[in-house]
Structures are given as C-alpha cells and as structure tokens.
Length: 65
Image (cartoon, rainbow, N blue to C red):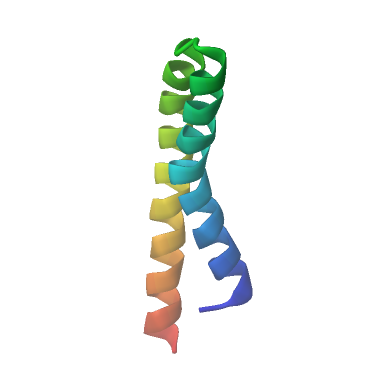
C-alpha cells in the first residue's frame, strides 16, 4: 500500500469514527445533544464515501502489483 493510500485510509476511518466520538464528548460536556445529532449524517457520508473510494484504490494497487 502506498503512503498516500495509507493516509487516505486512516483519514477516512478518523472521519467515520473519530468525529462522532469528538462530538459525543462535546455533547457530554455541554449537555446539548444537537451537536452530536447534526454531526452524524455529515461524518457518516464523508467517511463512508472516502472509505469506499480508498478501498477501491487499495484493491486496484494490489491487482497491479
């Protein structure tokens, strides 16, 4: 796996998993759950889309090698 693909993979995972965790902590500290509920659709859409594209690139790299 190339360096750029690794970075893209970990970034996609961070957006998919890390952002909801960050917003959960913020919501717990503030007590307003709107922050979490408003961040979920955006982080899921961006993270899942980038994860699918990254996995396709990884698959293509393995076929070429």
